[in-house]
Image (tube, rainbow, N blue to C red; front, side, top):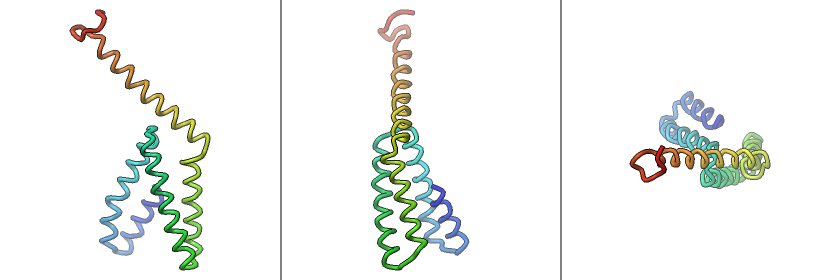
Length: 124
């Protein structure tokens, strides 16, 4: 996410208006996707892993063809991010707890709403 913001700022400073429009859509979508991962949505985590793996492969290929150290470091950064999101036991535990809390909160809210007068539930 921080990398996305830095790319957007660099595009503003260089005057690349077409790329700026691209960043105006990509940065908010990245933030939204990361928020969904934080909330514990499995599909968002899988989508993030797929997109980051694709980006890492593209950056690694470009780094090898251009012999660019900066692109190589970026590829390593993306692979480290990929490990953390996909395989880290602490992240797995955190996201499972978030998912459980989210599902528990939804179930509690529905049972409380269903217990009122006229709902067919037990009378209070």
